[in-house]
Image (cartoon, rainbow, N blue to C red; front, side, top):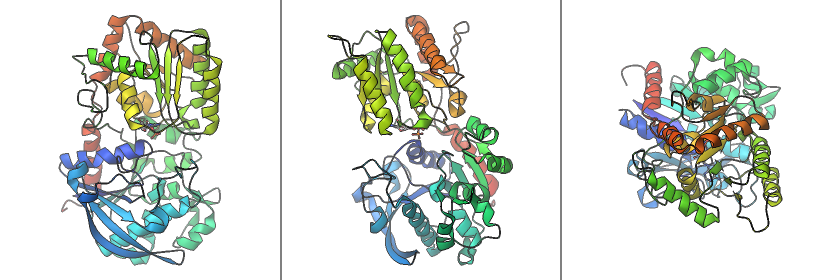
Amino acid sequence: MYVLHIAFECAPIAKVGGLGDVLGALPKFLRRAGIDAAVLMPRFGDAQVKEEALRLVHEGTLSYRGQQLAYRLWLQAAEVLGFPVYLLEEPVYFGRSGVYQDPATGLDFPDQADRFFVFQRGVLDVLKAGVIAPDLLHLHDHHTALLPVWLREDPIFRELAELPIVFTVHNAEHQGRYDWRVWEEIGVPVAQPEALQHQGQLNALKAGLLWADAVTTVSPGYARELQERDDIAAGLQEVFQQVAPKMRGIRNGIDPDVWNPATDPLIFANYSVDELAGKAKNKAALCRAMGLRFDRPLLVFIGRLMREKGVELLVAGLEQLLMHQLDVSVVVLGTGMPAYQAALEDLRCRIVRPGGFPRLVLRFEFNNTLAHQLYAAGDILLMPSRVEPCGLNQMYAMTYGTVPIVHAVGGLRDTVDPWDPRRQQGTGFRFETFTPRAFLQAIRRALTVYHRPEQWHILQRNGMQQDWSWNRPAQEYLELYRSLVPVTS
Ligand code: ADP
């Protein structure tokens, strides 16, 4: 069986968040489980590819809004990442740096929608030309979600109309909403246009949900929430309920080739569950580099500074904590909304004590090395997400012996078990209500255990001994694919 994943990100070629991590690992694990898998993505100007491993496999022309756009299809050999990656190069829309945003301004590209549509038109052209001949398409997020409509509804693609399609929702907040006239211009007529619309607009996510043969999302908890809570489904709850019979949640995994404290080349000292002393060396090195005190608990936040990540709660919780408690250090690594950066910066200024050590370090950048170092050095990971489809950070943190404090939502509830001191079980701390008070109480509970080192080490070890790898989720995808692909392939 040959599965082609189609997505806008694939780490380390292009990564903005968890989507990139998933695409960078799942195909490798599917291949280890015995099937063929590849990725097809755009070739952005700053794509982290290995030039010497690239081979030109196809040249074509795609049509988009009356333009004839020449494109090239490159293939990066499987040896580089453990699976082949096809890269669609088209200079007008992709010949510049950045995935969704212009790195120079931090703002979305004004022609972002065109980039999504052009990529999909290119994919259609490649499939029609037969350059890649998969048994199943696995599409990721709204950037690729109109493909099933074209494939099923446009007679030009008749010979591909039976190709099974799995559509994975990594984040339902991002739906690809456009003026309906856009579809009239670039799309194909469908019997029930309302099926493509939400609140009168073209809605790419909805199209993917309805037209795909199977829908998955990235944790069982999020799958339930999408069907039960319209706020989490961002207005599409009814559609998620409608597709429930063909939908399931499969939690994301992590790639131990990249995320393993015993082998990670980016951290200061390697360590393992049997030899936790190395973790302290990481903390010492990081604290030295940042001017922080080593003898205080180190709390870290890593992630996009966006509403869904609960940044208001982070700011409010940290304010309470840092105003009243002097003996903690906090590092925040993230990029995102300027207003959140300003609120954090303002807090940092307000808690400065003359002659004191810094207690809040802010790094508003995307820095993969620093992220690895923070997972290794931190004592506690803060993850107060308002919504969390799966979340990878908490799994990385546990793997590195950093104890997560999470809002009990989506994949966070599925992956973090509350610490139970009587039975010495659990992997972290959860809070149920999305309030600064509940968050702060969870931090205080965690700090109490932190100051009882024997208990803390058990808690750390519990987290490090979990198997968050892709082995199990890859098997679940495999079962799904097998249920959709005729047995002959
Ligand atoms: P999401 O996909 O919603 O952003 P996830 O927790 O699923 O959230 O994945 C986030 C990924 O992005 C993790 O690999 C995390 O380490 C990484 N990440 C987020 N922000 C940064 C940053 N500023 N620097 C480095 N890595 C980051």
